[in-house]
Image (tube, rainbow, N blue to C red; front, side, top):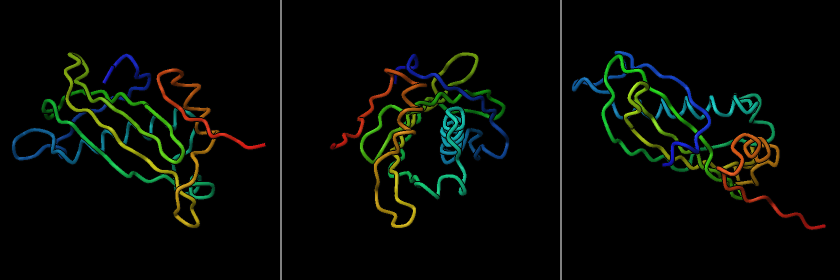
Length: 153
């Protein structure tokens, strides 16, 4: 992943409840770090992320979540989660994220998650809303591949 394409970053500090018996961050906690990055990214774009706002027009679910563990994080480490949307297709979009140690930029892990937009009444896939596409495009510009829906006149 090209770190230069990431415009959104949040800090994370490893807490004692996040480490395992080996003294390193338990693998499941990386999912939480990446989720914090995704939620913060959306909030930065002005997209509300709560049950009351998204459930009316559309809902989003994670269809796939991949992590590459590259280097262990330990208790007290100061980390950064760099997050971006890499593509938006018809009914889905992908987040990418990089987790790095703050001072050295040692890469800890990388994440790709695929999200699908659903009709809240039927739970069937629907087109990613145009407003969502516009906000992502305004923030990430040419660093995101967006398939704009075609309209028949």
